[in-house]
Image: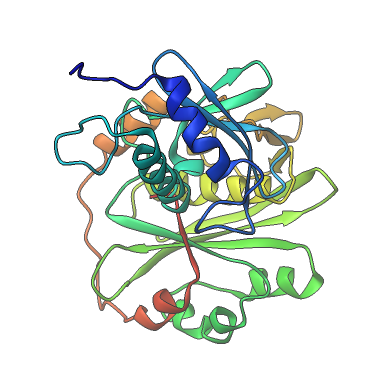
Length: 291
């Protein structure tokens, strides 16, 4: 029997009725699949994500990601595994961490050539209506951060998301930085601030600002502007425009090699002083992104 007896056309035909017109398994409010197309070496799924202004695509390999030997499966079984793998990727940060290639009519998400995030830290986001997190904001303040600016932004109704980073530890502490992104127009968002503990590596700035920009794009932002001066913004694709910096949310300008080099070259880091517990706030946070 040939090693790969099933064509990508047969695989796409089996997967299409499971996805097209549906909104996936795990993110029913967020992902709408437009079509499933066979290509020479994979099956392309084109989809929309929330209010993101561009059509996205992801190629699914013709072999199951869940079989021990990576062998080929009958199309209906492959389709079931492919559906699960596609949803799993969307729910574990692919939209933030993937490299991107511009294709006719869509942007393809592809695997990065190197690391995308500093895995010593976790990045979480909270939207304005997440009352559980906002009621526990004093736990974040215990690690030395002033939340008055973000609480004021939330109160005036412009906040899109509050993004925070913490050490990837058993307790979820300490918190090491935060950023906020707001809406300034129908298609424009603003990165208001990015504050990090003084001794943490610049990789935390990358993760916070990238995550904030992506979340803004999911809410329809075609560009993100900022007056911040952190040098890490340049490798994320922010470009100088007169008195501000601007990022196109197609996210085609990120320097992936520079991000990878920054992560690989980052110095060792351990929390200094008394480590305060922030586990409750970590547990209350509803979304983990950028991993």
